[in-house]
Amino acid sequence: MDITLSNINSIRLAGKKATISINPEKDTKADVSLFTDPEALQGDFKAFYGPGEYEVLGSMLDGIEISADNTCYSVVIDDIHVTYAINMTEIFSDAQQDRMGGVDILIVSVKDDKSELIDKIITQVEPRILIPIIENEAELAKIKAEFGKDVEPIDKLKIAKKDLPTDTQQLVLLK
Image 1 (tube, rainbow, N blue to C red):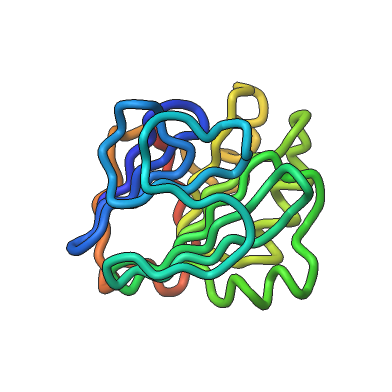
Image 2: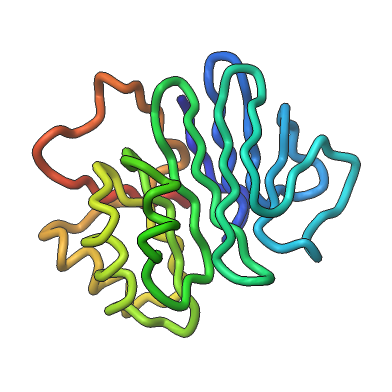
């Protein structure tokens, strides 16, 4: 599977059978598009918004309500479990976390530069790979320091299930 970042909140997951775009720009090509905010629905997409379970070309998608205007998505593509949660204002409830199941890759952002909230979410979810979406350089520096190394941003994460880290968490920065 390949993971790329189109803009600050737009992610594209390209698997063997399906391509899923979350919060895509108008010209993004994907088999299905998911939106976290109903006002973001734009263009001529095969799209889903909001809570619910969907299956597209062998990939399982689960929209989990975070608030009335924010949906988190849990996606299983190529047997890799990716959770995409942006604009978080608190940690996941037990019910939300149960719906997510085990998380291989967590893509997360929080509102208002609350780095302590990101720390709590990482501890709660325990992903194998963390992809933070951060606009604030100070917060990015703090996350890099917590992982103990300076990570350079990459254009695309290409990963297979067998390549997921098993005993450590990996920080990946997409540009």
